[in-house]
Image 1 (tube, helix red, strand yellow):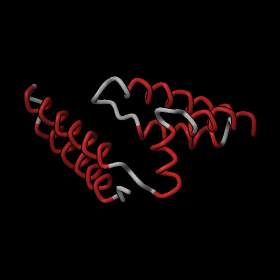
Image 2 (cartoon, one colour):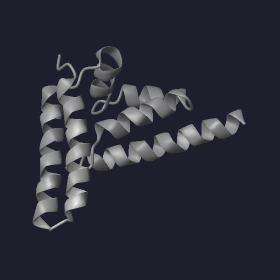
Image 3 (cartoon, rainbow, N blue to C red):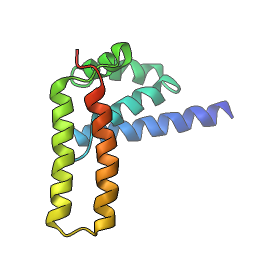
Image 4 (cartoon, one colour):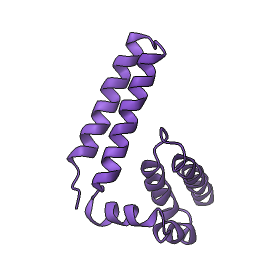
Length: 121
């Protein structure tokens, strides 16, 4: 049973890492949440992958900032909020049904509120 749990944590961690890497190049896919999830999963499955991600030159800094102080850099906050606004704009432009827009506004509003209320330094 312990081996199965470890394998599942590893699989979710690897999937999250892949999605995070893709998100680094696609502006509408978030990178940081996937990398934080990957670190969480790797802490339960692979010390080597956990250490690699925490010390990664691109992703390690924000992960360490979050783990040590709960900090999200201002630049990251504004990129995230800008991406959320872009998603809403695209939804309006493509005539997405009103109930879907309402769900997006509520969900993205909650995420933006969370992000913007985290410490920046």
